[in-house]
Image (tube, rainbow, N blue to C red; front, top):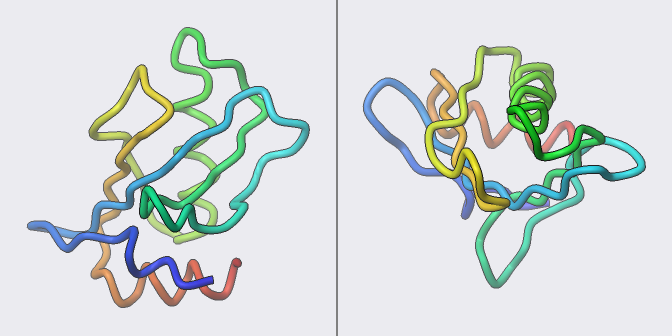
Length: 98
């Protein structure tokens, strides 16, 4: 999985563009959507009261071993997550996981 097209270097770290599927049977990264250039992430939580966003942060924190935060798309399936690591390191961790 080449997730590099979903990553963007920003001041202080990296932003990752996600396409989220809430209420899935299992949580995890499913690959990259080649048309939207977004990492496809499934979560088991429903998209209400911030539950899906919280699960996304926990899932991504576990994968990249650094705190993550949803910075855009709080109420959308298309989200952007901030990670305080350089893009090269994030890409490597996503490759290992994917």
